[in-house]
Amino acid sequence: VLKIKPKDYMTYQTIAHIYNKLEQYKNAISALQKVIKIKPDDYASYYGIVDAYSTLKQYKKAIKILKQLVKLDLNNQQEAFNEIGVMYGKMNQYNKAKIYYQKSIEKSSKTNYGPYLNLFEISLITKKPFEKYLVTKFKQLFKNDKTVMMQYVSLSILKLIDTKNYNQEKIEALLSDFRHKYAGLSFVDWHWGTSEKWINAKTDNKQALQSALTFFKNFDND
Image (cartoon, rainbow, N blue to C red; front, side):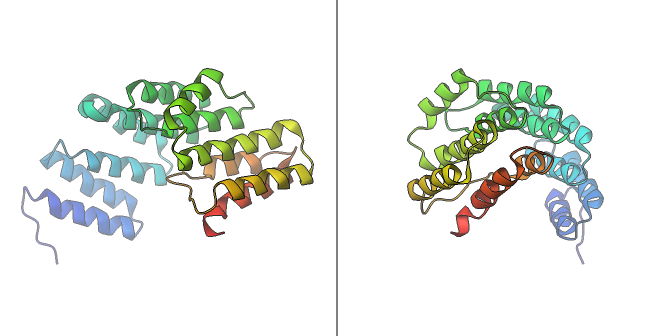
């Protein structure tokens, strides 16, 4: 039994963690709101609420919390902007998502590659070319980070398969080169849900794209 003192925010954090494990996300949100009431600068709890709302597919509520964070956590605005972009992306509002990914890049350190990859993925699923200035800037910043470049190359391969109508032999050659170049590496903090949703809704090149996506999803286990 947890005994709660009026100002004991850490106990509420523990309660929220338990509720999350039990997949009782509304109760987790309630507990985290109590944390914030006691300790308004506990920004991790704000993100915990965002994650819970996202799991519940209540993306507008998540965005509302994230916009509060933009004003509160001035030293980490890039993360809040990026997450707002993610939420808009989950609602298929890609133009709004792009705006916030761009804001994240403007506020980002030179090590924050996430919003770049998110923008490339939006270009992929909306059938737009990867913007040259973004590709140039991305490569300048991350050309020596093989893991980050691997994630960019995987999106580029999906783009090629979708636009070039490659035959199976050509696709297998691309994936073989990828396996050889990035052997031993793993995708870091990257989720394929958005790309997978897009591929599953397609009618053209669907089988080839699904095959490539399966390759990338299983790459860590090869």
